[in-house]
Image 1 (tube, helix red, strand yellow):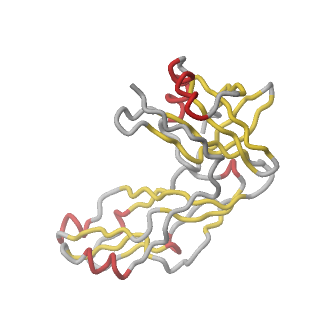
Image 2 (tube, rainbow, N blue to C red):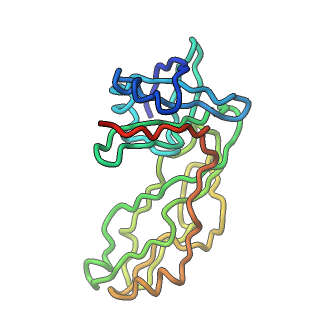
Image 3 (cartoon, rainbow, N blue to C red):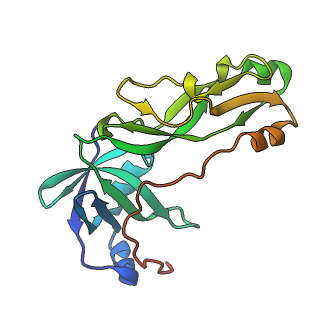
Length: 214
């Protein structure tokens, strides 16, 4: 993936006063991480919104601050509920020489023949997996091809997912990722397959930035 660089400046404005920054076309954000003190920053709102629009919680971005580049993950994006525009972004600074553990979302692709030929239903067991790797080897998403699900009862398990040898999948290999059932049985499958609650490795320092935009 092409290297994404965002120019940032330190900011002293916090709390409800950040509304003034937004009106100036700036996006408030925070940098935090291991051996890195939480640092409030601001970004160009238009540039940041464009570059971050397709990035996930496992996307790697370079934050340029005070002439230094910091590799970081996009950990949390807060949006205006009505307008959909970004209000605040949390970036977790990481070391490119130290492995991290984080969860990566699963994206199902393809068409299951069992759905097309037998009116089956693809029930999702888990929608993300925990992995361990170096930050630069972290996949933005895990693509799972469901075109192999040819019959009712066919399933894809964690053990079936193949990633780069640089990425280790953690957790139970027998956990169901997706399974085909008869239409109407999805509720029973969902009760049988329990997914863990998603979590963020670490949240950035919270700020009281709940000013209502007019």
